[in-house]
Image 1 (spheres, rainbow, N blue to C red):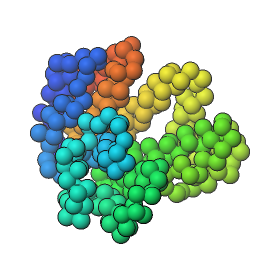
Image 2 (image 1 turned 60 degrees about the vertical axis):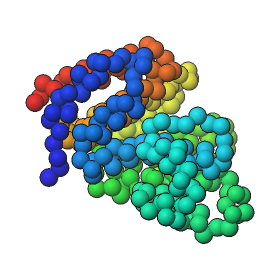
Image 3 (image 1 turned 120 degrees about the vertical axis):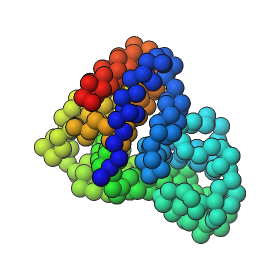
Amino acid sequence: MSRQYHCLVSSLPELVFEADSKNFDLKNFKDLVLEEVSINDAELVHGLFYAADNENLLSLLYSDEKEWNPYGKYTRDELEDILRDAESGSKNLPQYLREFFEQLNRLETEQRQRIERSVAEKLLSESMYSHHESCSNKYISSIFKIDREIRNIRAAYAGRKAGISPEKFFVGNDEINDALLKNNASDFGLTREKDYAAELFRALDTSDLQERERKLDLFTWSLIDEINTFEYFSIDAILGFLQKAAIIARWSKLDKATGNEMFKRMIKDLQGIDNKE
């Protein structure tokens, strides 16, 4: 039976009220959650942010000047230590990162340096999604499967607009990819196959870029609620809340009005959960 977090979930509204949407500190909030959950559940929390670790790892591998993403599990010093001694340093990494380093270690230095960043990025993404989709936790396996599908749909949608094949941008390989490559319908024939497709394409058809992103994030928000129906005090509820918090943190930097809108919505959601105790 999964561990229940009544006290932690009940305290979430208070923790959120200490901040506001303008300067919502996602890293600090994530750290507070990590202090309260079990060791196994802490790994699930970290898993939500593996994409940040991927981003930071690629920045070190390719020596770019990209700003360090603070939401990952590993600090710059930790990742640099791992890169200096990948064989021993990778032992405590998630399986998908261990596999990535194993592949690097099999290459000579010159070959390793010739790997294009886009190839390494796709390799990391595919490994990460495979890792998550095979996870025993319902929330992680569900949200990342849908997230990968949406990523591929967006690539196909953009590719059709630009007149290019999106295949090299796809992550993973499934029946949806086949439809995205072969079906000429405006919705790639997916509206009948996927419950979320109609709403997704309505968002994608929005011409204003910022409004499109807002609709896509609200779409993700709705998916989180749907996956976590009747989940109030479990780790799944906390994972969903953290993902909503990440959306708010993003919009607090992009657009104050949208950040405030989502912040108020999260408060309302949390108060509703609190009343169910």
